Every structure is written in structure tokens, then in C-alpha cells.
Length: 445
Figure (cartoon, helix red, strand yellow):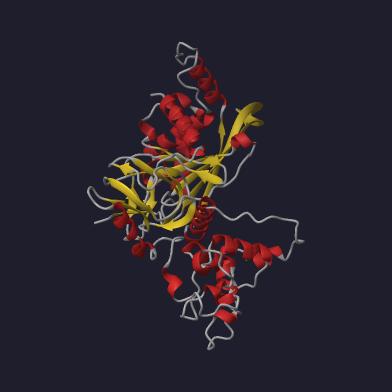
């Protein structure tokens, strides 16, 4: 029997991925554990290993295919002693249903039925159905494009992603009553409601600008995921904000002392180089240890009280951001946190993080101080109940013991899920954080 290779679920929330590259070709013999393909998710590019042994009989989904659904057939193996040609020919039938760009089923009903009209070129004998890839259908829905008005460029007139993009840039008519049942002639009126929940439609935006004065850049998977999660957060989580100013001079002095005393390798490279952000991560982790009621996640039936402070750190990468997690940060040394963050930052920009390295966590830090931002409020990223927004350290005139003095100050704002962390508890957590920042020796003992 042929062995089916399907699109793997590389994370618990993954619904589809892009098949970026095949590392094998038809006819290659593979064994369990061999890396056979690279899959792009919204957050990372990951290698896929073979589970079974055999010969690659047929590659069903070609490299570069976007929006391949989890569990869709992507390739077929011939087992030991099995005829490769027979395994390959047997792959055609199952491929049509799950694979997004390798469908052949429509060919029997469409070739000569309606050769002249433009719109029906992509129709089957079911006059109300247009054949389109799952990704194209989703993009059409989001853009308000009427699929029946398009001529597909895919196999057998199938509408694919590039057809939708061309329709958007070319101003093809948006979905209207033509696609609605006759009994609903007024369907066009309420249509903007779901669009408004997502944002302005392409048509509403583009008519405000002169043609040719812009270009359209389709949203990639990462940007769509960020938009979806943050919109969900602001719509479903009651945010509450607490801010405080922290004096940094003692922390900066200790940081300099620790960096100067770092062991050096034979080539003179220090074993670590602490940043202010490394010390912020540690301080927040210790504060959560000291205020355990704030180290929680909300569910409909329970308060999830965490035993360790797993601190996510927002890292900006091309096209968006990702939040790798320092696990059990309250137990780690500053040097361990620093080196772990350097590794995460490098691999995040290469999109090489593993799902377990950026999923979960109990809180997060978003630091825009290095960009000169004085203060801001971050959006809670569920299942976290808190996120700390960190501004720039700057010299300010303050009052100490009744006299004016100059100190380096940093403003931070704690955003909380008010269902889980109320104002008093948030203030207690922030006070504990401030204590470690202003008395940093406490982070070393």
C-alpha cells in the first residue's frame, strides 16, 4: 500500500502552512528521520522529518504552494518492494480533495459545457459553485471579491491566490447580490458589517487615493495572525493599566560592574554582556515569584496559577514580531538570561525558532526604550494576564529628601487582564518590580 505524507501540524494552533521547499525529489529513497521538506508557518520556517521508509513516488503539492491545510496530502511514498509507478498513479485520487493547488476533479464536468462565457469558465455543473483554492476563497471573502466574476488561472479554470490579488489591484467588482439567492435581494446592505469588524475594505480604502499612487502588499501569515490575536485581545480582554517610574542609576552601575568582570575566552570575547532588558526580565520574573497571585492565566472555569515565571520577550522581526520565552526566568542567572535572549533574537530573525520556544508563557516584556520611546501601553497577549511596556531611560530632575537632583529614570506600564489581575494586585506586582530595579543587588542573591 502507498504511504501518504500529509501536511503536519507543527503547533497546536496551526491550520495551514506554506510548503516552502522540497529537500527530496521523486525517486529518492528516504528513511525515518530524514529531513524531506521545509514548511513556513506564520512564525517560523521548520524542517519536516520523514516518519516512514520508502521511495518518493509522487510529490503532490509542489514547492512554493501557499495555504496548504493541515492533514492535506502532500506526497506519496512507495513502501519497500512496492512498484513506484503504481504508488504514484494511486496518489491522484486522494490528492484532489485535500491539496490546495493540485486538484484534478473538476476536469470531467467543465471542458466543453460553457466555453464562451467568461465567468462560468471556473464553474462545475453545479451553477452556484466556483472552483477555487481554500486560500483564494478566504482572500476573496476578506477582500469582498465576487468569485463568480473571475476567470481562474489555475488548473481547469480554478481560481487561485494570484487571481484574487489581480482582482483587488484591478478593481474587479466586489461580492454583491449576484451571488446571493433571489430571496435575499437586499443582502448587499448589511454586508459591510462583518468587514467593519476587521477594518475598512480594500474598495473603501483605495477609492480615497489616486490610482497609481500606491502598491498593494498582501498580508502574510504572520501579519494576519498578529492582527487576529490582538483584535481578539482588545475585544475580549478588559485591559487595565498601571504605570510607575523607576530610578535606574543603581542598576546601570551594577550592570557596568558585572559586564566588566565577565570572564573572557582566549580570543577576548566576554562570556556575557548584560543589557538593561536582561535585568528587566529577571526583575519581572522575581516580582511574579513574590506576588504569585499575579502569575496567572484566565479561563472560563479556572484561574490557572503558574508555578514558574515564563517571561516572553517581544522581538521585532521583518513583517511583525515574535515572543520567545525565557522559561523559569526567576531561577536563572542574569548571564544565562542574557545569552538565551541573544540566541533567541538571532534565530527569531532567521525564523528558526521552534514552536515550544515561543508558545505559552505566563507574562511578557515589550521594550521600546532602545527606540527612544518614553512610555506606551502594550496589548495583553493571551494566555498571559500581564505584559510590561518598558520605556527609555532618561535623565530627569527629581526631588530627593526635599532637594532637586538628577537621576536616570525609566517609565514602565503594566497592562493586565482585569478578570485575573485587578488594580491593587497589579500595583503590588509593579511595586515589587520597581524594588528590584532600584535595588538590583537583590537579583543576585
